[in-house]
Amino acid sequence: MKVFQPKITTALKGYKKEQIVKDIVAGIIVAIIALPLSIALAIASGVGPEQGLYTAIVAGFIIAALGGSRVNISGPTAAFATIVAGIVAQYHMSGLALATVMAGILLILMGLFKFGSLIKYIPYTITTGFTAGIAVTIAIGQVKDFLGLTYPAGTENIETIDKVLNIGNNIGSWNYVAFLVGLGALAIQIIWPKINKKIPGSLVAVIVGVLVVKLAGLKVNTIGDLYTISRSLPKFTAPTLSFTLVKELLPSAFTIAILAAIESLLSCVVSDGMIGSHHNSNTELIAQGTGNIASALFGGIPATGAIARTAANVKNGGRSPIAGMVHAVTLLLILVVLMPYAALIPMPVIASILFMVAYNMSEWRHFRDIVKTAPKSDILVLFVTFFLTVAFDLVVAIEVGMVMAAFLFMKRMSDVTEVRNWTYIAEDEQQSADELHGLKAVPKGVSVYEINGPMFFAVADKFVDIPLREKDKVVIIRMRNVPAMDTTAMRNLTNVYQAFKKAGIAMLLSHVNEQPRGVMKKSGFEKLVGEENFLPNIDAALEKAAEMVRE
Image (tube, rainbow, N blue to C red; front, side, top):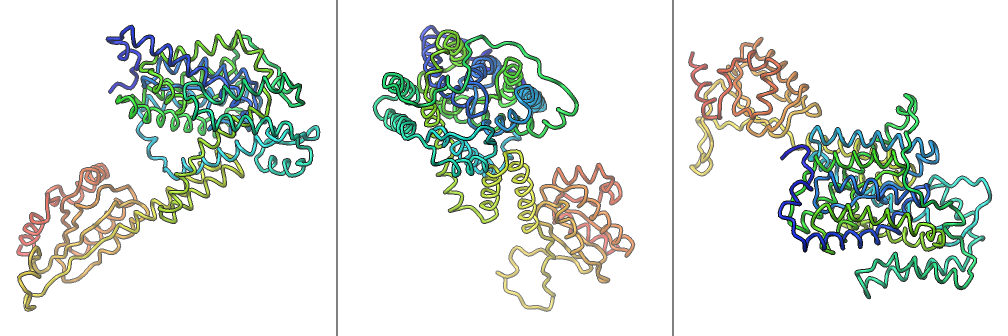
């Protein structure tokens, strides 16, 4: 499979008129679904409503055209809301643009170096933990607008802890009218899918909310009260560039890139199962990187594959990248024609939409299942990642989670790795045929040690378990169950060999697998021991050991 081969180059072969119509219809429907979500997610990210549409338009079109999936729909997603809000609060939009461009470059490099398959090595406990944590932070951030709370001027309301404290300190200012509007919008989104699955409940909630507030003259904050709405087309803006800023934003750029890679490839995997296709992960990463760079340069925020919108695309007949491109063009038309009307959308309705987004992305059932069934170490990683995401930020959560997971993995590997001495039966001992079945005859003066498990720095000291014994003339080290070895283990094995050589004991190695053999060859150990002392199996090693003892 080529590193970069956009699916559009193969999806349009044999493209029929009937499919063109289906792709156009699917693209329009997905745009209708994406409209309220893009606006709501932009507000949750601390930017203007139109910037959510800029993202869906620019990144959505480019990623669909260049991507490695037939049906993936990209745009702003809830996963980025918390980290984007933090960057905007500290570095403003120019800082966010630079971080997004850097993340885009990282994504392109990941694709070019074929890292698409490596994303799967991020533990499921970490992705579940930070996804649930993001859902909680989004939900907490919407309580203010849902209840219609008012805060004193200058109130810091960026960190999740600050938001919780501000809610408690200002709960007396709640607006019951705003609460009822939000509650009604939430009820519509829960009930409407049972009535009609074609029209998204979020769009119905927006329309009903606007009509009720406008016609009844209710005193409820709208988007227009808090934001200046623009329907102008995205304009090219180069981000401010400095070495200091790049250094400060690099951790955030890595987090955006990793999140974009995980979400987009997960969305591709889900859609593959729905349409019986197979995506090109490296092409998708390159497309995501290109789309994010373009989004940042034209006033947007980070984008990635959106699973819900992708699923809606598939269910409505989309089968080629044309659907994703139509979705972007439709949003562009909506931006130019209908964007001023977005000022009428009540803020409690936006909050209710984000409550639903948070609930759907929380994966609480998966969280519950891990707590019920997983080992304690995995549960620990899950909870630590979750609480760090909520209490601090996603960067800290992923860093600590990955370090913990790595250490726990090494602990597990060290627990299963062992150096075992064969059990010997003396010639004068009476043994039954059943007891002797499968046992191999080991010549006198020969000891066999079998290593089970990977030999790496955490267990390299287990080579010390191979002792020097005066009666030994030859020691066989059986390595058929050693899949991998690192430099530290290689150094320790070399030390053991040199100690044996000094004591006049020969060493034979049996059934050394490809990776360890490569390490031995590269380090010079194979030449030191002698290639003739590497035997393909234990029988050959025992036979050679017997000859060496006789000599």
